Image (tube, rainbow, N blue to C red; front, side, top):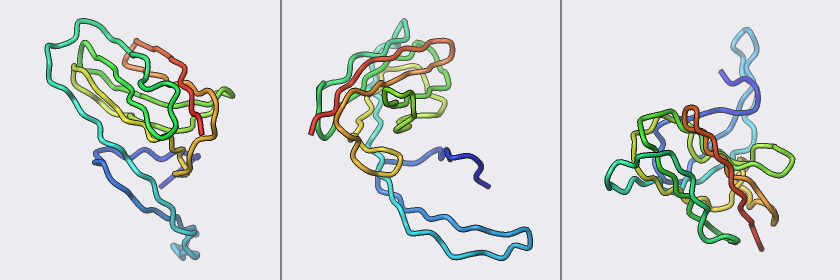
Length: 144
């Protein structure tokens, strides 16, 4: 069951996924399916190196960017990670990670797509890393 406006899926690998929604009444009679939508996940990779000794969110590269950018962060210990993109109104635009992660260095590629699988409008956005008690936010700029 989905409530609210955000649905979190775990364990997805890089690729394109298609989805649709359907209303179901209390008698389990389903209405028509909504138009099919899709979203694409880029790869998330762990580069095996020495275990980091601190939590870090580096500045994305390239910045500014127009089609994709790499977001690099380090985790000193295993922790639940939320890596999200926000517009300047504080509205979530994309979720890049929301899952437990092991200690290590991570590179996440954002293709500049929103929840609706649409290109984010040109402008300033915020990438926010929440890893346990650690929180860091950096600016990134989308240009077209």
